Length: 339
Image (cartoon, rainbow, N blue to C red; front, side):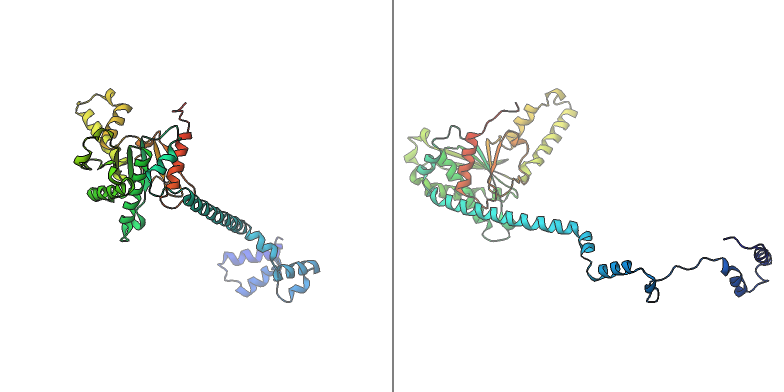
């Protein structure tokens, strides 16, 4: 609404003189008829002006608010429901696997007998020549019996491999604590082999990358049948033998290339494979994980390009049933070599 001509002239004249002709109250009285009316507030007096249907809807929403609550928390409710049912499924699956593994271990136990283990793998058409396993040091070694448990697990696996006729075993433990106790590891593994095989225990060799091996001394009474003695080579590796070795080899080859000691065309996949196999280890045919998930924990990546990896869902700890199922799975596997 525009101002009347007389009121407009009065306001502009007052403006020309710096608003000294009129007092603030007079200016308010002059402009008040032209200002819009303020919106009605929802106080007690104005609630009477609301329609009956709007008042009923407002009271219903303020009293219950179920629809408003569901609208605001719909995704939270869906997430909670999914989490609840999935948790029940995981717990039921873990319980089922724990019971089945326990029953399997009772009926298919090796009883520390090489003959029973040999009988279990006798019908397999293929056995790995090099078996790799991943072990975990519990509580990062802070508990006193963590290292002892690790040695017991390594000793059991070594005995299983010797009984099944697997000549080479590589044991991966991320921290590398076993590599600092090679004589003690050799002693523990030899004691366990003697418990399995008696006086005809296999000749054991325990080594680590860049560390000379510790071998079992052959008694004089067994020197006559030296060629028929079973042998087991155990290699201890850790995370430093993985990507760090690849980085060190890359730096060495780059420096040799810059100094013209080797031609660029000589740096091939075959050369890298030969250097890593010599400095660290060869590629395992089968890698068994004793954890509930496929977690390599820094295992040397170059050495498992064609390795068959096996694990049992929800499994906890080292067990013969996992070892046996891994060998059976390897025997049934089809190796297409990228075809």
